[in-house]
Image (cartoon, rainbow, N blue to C red):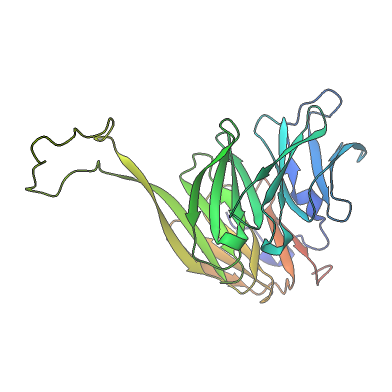
Length: 288
């Protein structure tokens, strides 16, 4: 759904904290709907009452925190500790007890940045590893990794059914669309028989298999912030170096429009729930 008037898009100095909103946070003294705001300088996560704008509590996080997401049940927050691709940590905050929990070490997946939470799992980009991964809080392990082969794999969007993943690759000026596909069961080549006395196939060997296909779409330079329209038909990127907005048709997987928005330095973009307006944060242009 395209905004009615692209020239009247809401923009300007929208705080990054307001784009890191987690709703449905339920706690003893925390409002049922809360804002989660990061302070890079103080290395803290603040829980804010959106009605009074009062800080309810603060908890420590690692150095250079960049993004925050809450679990679906609103009990836990996860913060990416970025460091320009050097660090390999996700900070974890108990939103009920309002305290820090042990960090998650992402190992060789350096530079965690973009975050999403879907179907009980935490999904994150690893910019230093040019990859996307998922972390299962139940088993406390990273259970899936996929490389993009693109530079600065940065922001992330995961559809609720986990069948589509979108990410911006800032250094390559591309968008990756990852699609989960079903493959037929593994079988020997046609006409080939199993050797006599060979081991039987493993359990579940006749079950369908799953894989991921990647489609790479070139967009404007410096594409960082992006969002998917509420109807799921379009993906818009803010191209910080070009000052443009790229509009991707997710059905045809092509760029359907490039808007000369003069949004130089734009690094975050968000649709309003009704899909009529965009909120864009620009470092270089206060209002446009």
